[in-house]
Length: 117
Image (cartoon, rainbow, N blue to C red):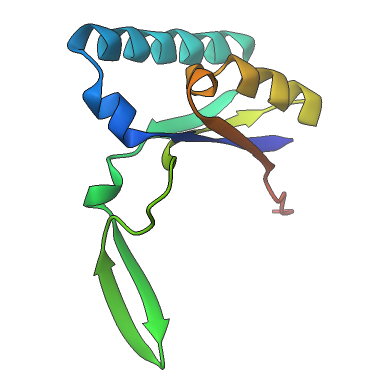
């Protein structure tokens, strides 16, 4: 079954990190991604740019509204994701616990809807 590991982090903490700390964090993510690939569970993944670069589209009263970010004053922001193939939720949770983002943020694990082709 496919699962999304949604990585919620505090953007401000990352932006305030020293160059050395940021390089260590990046290296940890590369190592984690390599481990997922070697285990055959990695399907996709990516890092998102900061919320200040985001744009939202919604309809209000039948009119399209385009809004530039950031939007919510929250402690954590969606910073990236991994899509993995895992035997079950326990296996997906095990991978989520190993994610470097789990040390300072939250990893949300969500099963994907599977559609017949």
